[in-house]
Amino acid sequence: MLAGAWGAQHLAVKSNVHAYPDGPDAPRLWGSLLSLWDWSMATPRAMLAARTFNDHRTAAGFGVAARILAPTDVSTMAVFGAGKSAPMTIRYLKAVRPTISKVMLAGRSAERVRALASLVAAWPDFTDVEVEVASSPEAAVKNADVVATMTTSDHPVFPGSAVKAGACVILGGANRPTAREADDNLMRRSDVYADSVHGLSDKAGDVKLALESGALTQQRILAEIGACIHAIPALSGSSDVRIFKSMGLAIQDVVLAEHLVTRAEQLGFGTVVDLEGKALPP
Image 1 (cartoon, rainbow, N blue to C red):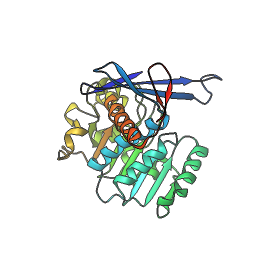
Image 2: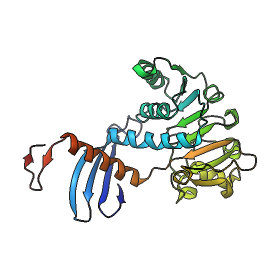
Image 3: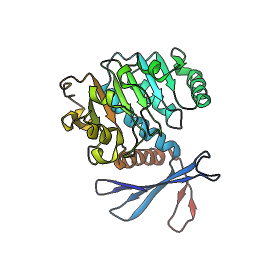
Image 4: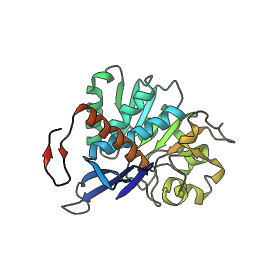
């Protein structure tokens, strides 16, 4: 369960439920429900089914990072992971870097990666974009200006030495102290930015394990992304890659939920229910 507040009025509480009905090796089932409250009055405002909500919220955070940290003349994007967050991530990164003309896809399941490639290639606004299933992790990243990872892997998913100088790498998965998507070779070359530095060195395996090995120093964890809207710190020392490590912030849920509920009220969407459970006209 996640809870976040924005100002004196807006509170969001989100529950994510996961199930493995046929055992731990079976496909995961999960659902997500978010409630939005006016907490100054202890009054519920709305309840949202949040599976698609989560995809947009996560991908939008990646998009903000890419808009700030990625080169302005991006042409190639590499994406690792073919799960539910991948399609929106591709859309949001293309939205902030419309010069992208090639998408390289990689993942553990060849079938899922091919399915994702077919989905992306069929989007009307991607007709001029080349979508390719990478032959190897190295092939995926070697020419990529932006690399995004959304995996559950415990181990690095591509060789950091193959990443081109000047690239922006968005690490969006494996958010556990013992799991990492980036190897020491990449962390040794990189400056690190985050949505929040609070707990980053303890909770994010990409950072924690690299600090423990000496591949990363605290001095190269430069800033929270929100502090870089108007100015990005210069690359430090021998660094030639910028990393954004996403852990997710509860306030992202609050702000997006408030925006969506306000728009729904303006447009007359949704079902209005009084506190006694009686349905009212929208």
